[in-house]
Image (cartoon, rainbow over all chains, first blue to last red; front, side):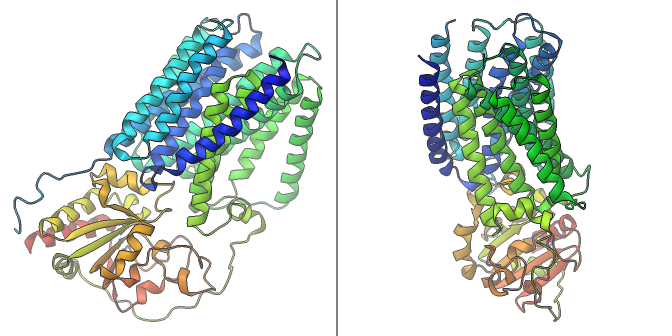
Length: 107
Length: 462
């Protein structure tokens, strides 16, 4: 595909993804907005793909090598931290029931 | 692996991410959704490793190990009250990574004149710019939330002029890069300028406005990831970045609406000192009625319906667990207990829900503002713990009040209101609250945690 053709496809994908994002995220209840934020945090950790590409250059000069390495560290922290912290939070949301609900009645 | 094959496999990642967000629409499926998202990420990482031109070397594994260790330890250790800082931090590192990827790409591609297409150089410039602003801004937001630096808006003379000059300089280097001046120092200047701008952008914003800032920085990092996708020709980055950008933008707008402030006012308010005495709030005079924990315990025990309004003050006092214990005791006496959560309760969107979930409050009892407001007239007692502005009726009735027009929890419509406060100081916005003088209101002074524990003890003896 020509470079121009590819750009048009990418722009189309971008536009559709934005609309999809708005639709999907509008359905997330306020109850879960903090996990939503840390979850999307984890998702933007996808820059790790870019970080791996530049950290994986075959024979980089000094600058590219170190920049790639640092990018890799940052992106990995983003991915792992994002998913772990989201999981930790979502684990806490429970429906109930405190086991001692009815049993004892009035003390 | 060929580019087409890897793009096909990246589609799996995209589907996983969309499903992950879709599953977040209910607390019962949300955790599974997060795992699906993580699986999608794993697919992307493996596919990238197998890609032609990606050499494993030492940088990828060592960088991944160091980064993962930091991420995992940070995520495990962080307290739920500190979640906003954590989110700001992860936002920042993501933005920083995007900016660095652009720097490396430009450094590698640019020396050969005419090799960069305009759209690629534009993406590189945008990703470097937005990523750097997000990184520096997030670090300042982190420092403010962690109280490493003061939460008050920081301003200095000549701020507007300085910002304008800085923005012009950043724009000029960006334009030069796009126009094809493929000089290394240009991108470095762009990144440095954007970092300084990120700092100056967040410094003047007050602590109470942090929910808006974090949401906005979240959107920025998403956009930076998208721009990185354009520069690498990677659909998975474009789509993921767009999803995050959409989410951050929606949350920013919601937060602005909940505070009845335009985003522009939040971001640039301190520049022009808009918030200084916006109007003359009616000076309040009257007597405040104070009660003892024993009185309140009796009142609560003989109610049918009690609504608890938690504010950030409750979280600061670490009173969540005591509050849940009180609710448990009351429910044993067949009192219905709900929690009314204002959208800006806490320091980031949805923060209060997480804090209460951590204290084992079942989530069906957490009611959002629009759901609970019609129920206040049938509520016997409202217990306001460490909240102030979000229950201030002046937002409805006094056009002179700085928070006039902000949607609030209408607790004054309940039969009785108990406000737990440390003392008679005013809330974050520094305004008087007519609720405290309402004949239906009684004040229970003292540390939130101590007071709630006293209530628990008193309710138990009844």
